[in-house]
Structures are given as C-alpha cells and as structure tokens.
Image (cartoon, rainbow, N blue to C red; front, side, top):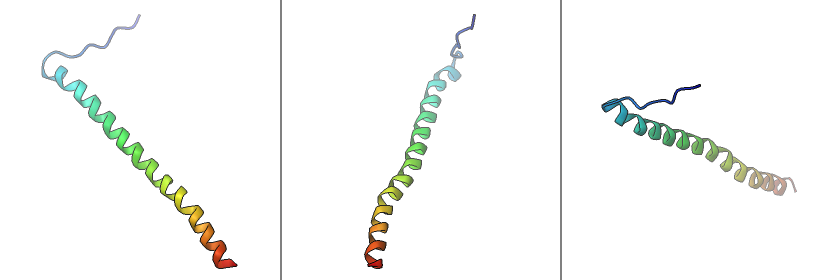
Length: 57
C-alpha cells in the first residue's frame, strides 16, 4: 500500500502548491516557444517555394 504524499506543515506547505503552479506555467511557456518556431517555418516554406518557382520560370 502506498502512502499519500502529505503537504509539510508551516511555511513549506503553503509554498509548495505555488511552486508547482509556477513550474507548470514556465513549462507551458517553453512549449509554446518551441511550437512558435516550427509554425513560422511552416508558414515561410511554402512562400519561399512559390518564390523560387516564379524565379525559375
């Protein structure tokens, strides 16, 4: 049987939920940043291909 994780008493217990939320928000921001780069490339590449095709013709 596993024991439930208890929140420590006092100040440490009050800070724990906030730290977890802060870490989750930072992680979400980093993931959004990582997605932003491929999205911009995905939008740029078809335009670059079309421009290259026009220049070739």
